[in-house]
Amino acid sequence: MSTYKSDIEIAQETEMLHISEIAKIAGVDPKYLEQYGNYKAKVDYNILNETEKREGKLVLVTAINPTPAGEGKTTTTVGLADGMKKLGKNVLVALREPSLGPVFGVKGGAAGGGYAQVVPMEDINLHFTGDFHAIGAANNLLAAMLDNHIYQGNKLGIDPRRITWRRCVDMNDRQLRFVVDGLGGRVNGTPREDGYDITVASEIMAVLCLASDITDLKERLGRLVVGYTYDEKPVTAADLNAQGAMAALLKDALKPNLVQTLEHTPAFVHGGPFANIAHGCNSVTATKIAMRLSDYTITEAGFGADLGAEKFLDIKCRMAGLKPSAVVIVATVRALKYNGGVAKADLGQENLEALEKGLPNLLKHVSNITNVYKLPCVVAINRFPLDTEAELKLVEDKCKELGVNVALSEVWAKGGEGGIALAEEVIRLCEQPNDFQFSYDLDMSIKEKINAIVTKIYGGDGVVFTANAEKQIKQLTELGYDKMPICMAKTQYSLTDDPTKLGAPTGFTVTVRNVKVSAGAGFLVALTGEIMTMPGLPKVPAAERIDVDATGKISGLF
Image (cartoon, rainbow, N blue to C red):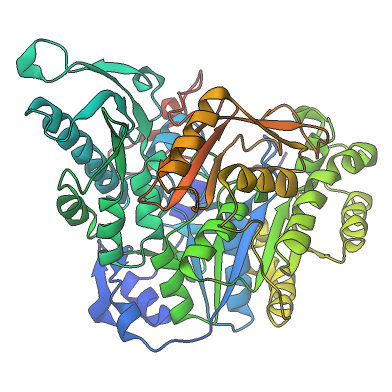
């Protein structure tokens, strides 16, 4: 039986180029480069003000709803870029940044796999350049200043029962979801209910990702709503005079991180990563710098097209004035069979009936991209060794019925060479005119916007709002927050709010139980189902398999 090298083994065997060489390939002037060792660097965002503009093409890589069988979205993103490079194109990658918490909980993604990865992989998946620490520090500084204000006399009249700002930590830790703090007498603060979110769910992450520059960052931080007064007026970070210090903590974190693929294609890894509980896209600054330096920028968004792509298109592109040239939807035959009801253990066997049953999930995402957003699209089938020709042909035929081509991607095994067919199709699509549009208008009511996402993107019949959500929507509308886009917090495993409903269900409604304003990010968050902003560790955390030897070499990460 053949054995495959692990992702980390492949990554560690790679001869990386010095980051200054990668910067040279990318066209980054040395004066904008801030090195973190030999293989990582930050790029000063002032490059945007001092570099000649170009009309670079933007390509979004998204996927079907994730399954335990795997899809390979980041792997495809990296392999596609390497494939374009092999065709002689000037191409850069803009990826999300993996989070330390999930790495210690379950196997993380967002760094690719096989022979289509970004490196140094261990650094990227662990501490990297400290961005997440800076986000956590800025978040928790605001929490500390808020509680200190109450302790020092509460001049603003903040109602401790109506504080909305939570602390955060970059770790999956269910123990911290709900806590009571400030205990132990008057000198130790004011007792109140509190709680922690995982760092990537912090609004600070979204602010960092959506800020166009340091001035915009500071203004967004000032607009953060931390709670409400006794007479129900919102209290902001600016009211607490916190935005300046927070911006100072985030000054370097705002600069995108430059690394490389295994084949030395320059890659920005910055911001993100989870679109089920947060914004879930990489930063506007990284995307814009990549587009300024290259003819093709390949980027991705978290989880399936119903989450990551929807937020990328309806939030990020709208705010940043971006217009994608093409979209890639990644799928595997295995994942589609899983959607069709096949157990994970049986996915290696040909099953055309199950494949046909699971295909509607892919076809719904394809239809959303082409019919709702009006963008050119290609389906990338991330090929596995046991996929049969009959299965691959069925996928191809069904996609062609929607006017969309299928390209086989073999980047996991072959790197850029396995991405050439996909690259050729993407280049072709990029030359086609498109009529990009959003799935809803901002001047619609909050309920109308949420309903548009549920009916158009998920395929549902409508939305059920709990009494609590109804009250919140009324208040947010009265406060003038109703013209913002919507950031849906929903399970990634289904087009519905029920993770067990696979394929492309119909006849369902989505229940919204909470709507809150993220005024700094510039959107409203709608919480559905059982989605949590602080996950817990699984029964056997990945941390149990991670180790480091006497030389500092890490094992078990992937």
